[in-house]
Amino acid sequence: MRAQTPDRRRAERLTIPAQHFTPPGLELRPVRLLDLSPMGVRIEHAEPLHEGVVCHVDLPPALGRGSLTGKVVWTRLHKREQTVEGDTRVSYQSGLTFIRLTPEQQAKLADALQILQMDE
Image (cartoon, rainbow, N blue to C red; front, side, top):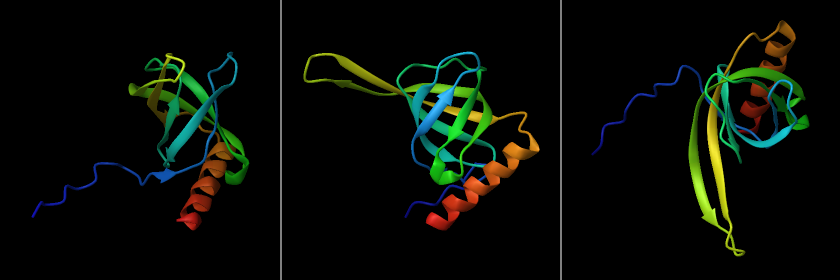
């Protein structure tokens, strides 16, 4: 029998639907939001991100809309696939920690987390 290891996370993560990611001053980049917590978000995307980059993550309408400011803490190659056409398609995952959230952004995050908890 294997002993269960304690969860090292500081806050529970909740899975969320896809939306967008916006590095400041750059174009919108579609991402898949994988999970959300009071501390940050994990995303999946097509191009690597650099640690320390500050960006905005847009919450989808189902979570009340809103843009949250985050900083990239880590990025890793998640998957590499060969397409039928012979091209290689890659996907990356990144973890972002929320920074400098305004009271309005904090309220939007709290609302989104509450919606996700009701869906579980």
